[in-house]
Image (tube, rainbow, N blue to C red; front, side, top):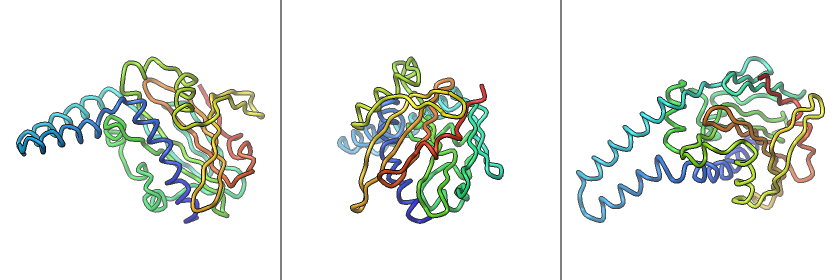
Length: 234
């Protein structure tokens, strides 16, 4: 399971790239920029004022997002905000709150309000994660807020296509063989500590938020076996 956690953390790099692109450098990035300018001028009060303004802006944005967290019950993850449902394949387990924290996945103990603040700050929110009992493959359910009018105007397919260019992945579609449902998707390859992995990401949108379902496995893994239990109920 520790190996799965490390891979999950590595997978965050892609999602973080998505956040920066979707939010146009808002939130924490703008706070850092403001802080840097204040340091250059030697004005601590300016930095404090900028941080306060940024915090107020993030809080205001969080109130507008109104994202609702999903929940794990037994072998099933559901998120009513997206109308999403995922049933674990045999031999898989959801991460516990402690395992989510160890993997630096931030959604374990946050309230809805705190999750919205994370999204408004320009960061990714992880709703749930799971892995095979052997440690691989893994699957994560993360949320990205479209923080600019340009990003908000994109549907899930356009958003996925744009992200595929950023991460040099292959844009296409994934069709659920059980339900026939079709999702915009990205396939990519990555490497960690000399080990090669395949990754596939599915995208769906509700409001101004995107749900990104990310399956990661050793090179050659049939990730369809991991993703086929993901469905939308609305």
